Length: 208
Image 1 (cartoon, rainbow, N blue to C red):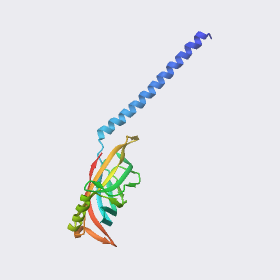
Image 2 (spheres, rainbow, N blue to C red):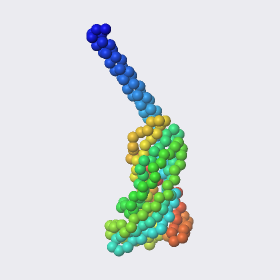
Image 3 (cartoon, rainbow, N blue to C red):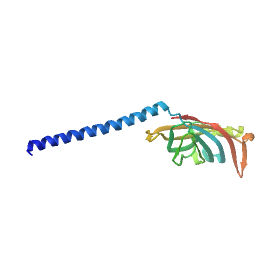
Image 4 (cartoon, rainbow, N blue to C red):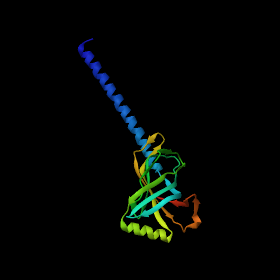
């Protein structure tokens, strides 16, 4: 076999490899396109969150404008999708009062939520001698005297959608759950030792 024939066979082999590689890449792109199309057709619905209850162990303002809090919440999430799962990759839970964060963020465990599935978390959130603005200190004292304090339990995290074997990129999740707590709300509160547990069952606002 001449050098010319060998070169011709090498060229044919390279062409065949290129065709196979092109076909493989095209096949992968087609599969990804089909999965993406299915994902867009299904249109994932954002999860539903409910703040079920809050147990207040401490909620005290001291001079000079320092707030100490310690409470446990029960937070439920439901995946309303029939054919889409949800990965909760990172969820930080914390509390705010009139726009100011008053607790440290508490990281809840990562989890996967199947179709129509429920997940319940019961994290503790707390803050020790957190400085607050003077006007917030006055407002909180007034609210406590009135017997009703509005705090907002918030969730900040990342989620991914799962359709079949396809898993999307990460999406930012924001959850805001208003919670009214206070000594005069007798109807929805029970004493738990020295703490007070408030039955809230409050729907939360969710943005994804």
